Length: 473
Image 1 (tube, rainbow, N blue to C red):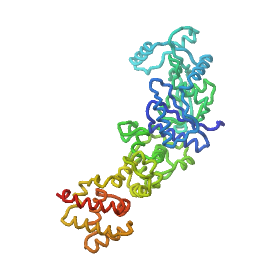
Image 2: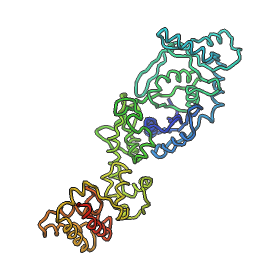
Image 3: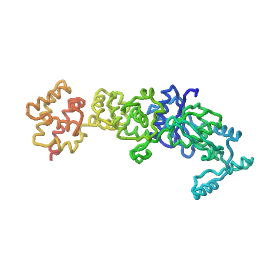
Image 4: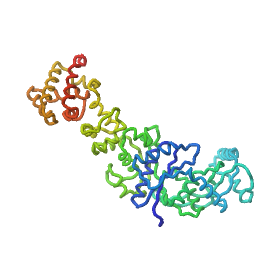
């Protein structure tokens, strides 16, 4: 093959972008980038019953968010209907296709007869025989079928190796429906020819379509592209990934707070490995080493827990200023993008698995002091004892004397207080944590205090002191 390499991602807009489709897009992109090729985006929207424009727009949006940078498109098949009809006419003229006037009722009868006989249904070819007799001057609704001849159909798949089918096992499949709209088989082959596609990487649920497409490429006198059929993605139940086991679309994971780079990384490793035990690999690194022939033949398992872990790794490594734009849609209140915010993001990014977790962690730092709630478990564990009020007053006085109010200064003051009183530092730190954030756990408490600011930290200690009688009862 001497043509410049060109791949395509060609989703049907019948729903949101499935993560399996997103992986296919990523594999096409990486293989093209590795070998200096290009990729086009084609929206296969000729199924008028199921295709929806808003799904097409969502697919484009999801790909852009994920960072799948196609070089051409999006191209809509619905804009090319005349081209498909033109090419069918060529096949009719060459005798590679024929008109079929069989009604739905006739075909149903044939199918039921095959089922009763325990045979796999295959079109009887009655209209093909009529065409061979020159009896095609009938009128009425009809489809156009491709003439399939006996013989072996062979190709080498980049993932599966040598594959073959027997022509006598294939139907004379439909190319043009009775409403003059093309079937998938016709439109995809015509497009791949017209758009100079050299490599077709798609899910292995399309494997049974490939011999039909090879026949069409040959019927048109076109070069057959290189095929690569990607293994299925399974859910945690080891069945085909579906809603039964959780989210399945890119948009769902986006709304759960997964970063685009983390999802890209995760999907690129579903069925492919860069070698070693690497779990984190950038797309630029993948572009240098990925090859479709290295994709595993076995089905890959979509592990939500692993994706969550990987997303946490990305969050922990990202600068707070880079996280902020992704975080915006998860914030439930207006927050200024100032140094204080970035400090708080840095406190929590390594403790968060998702952007949603991170946004939730910011709430205690931005709500009004009166709105802070105290976790029951934290109250039960750390606000018991007759001397808790005294310890809170003492730690408040120690922090009030710290100037300037720094992490190191707060830590030193409280530890000196603990040493002087003969109590462990935890006796002061734990009640202070409840006062500042209302929780059992938090980032280092003096980091928290500095993030809140001195005045606000002291106000929150005072508020807890005022609420102690009710909380302790």
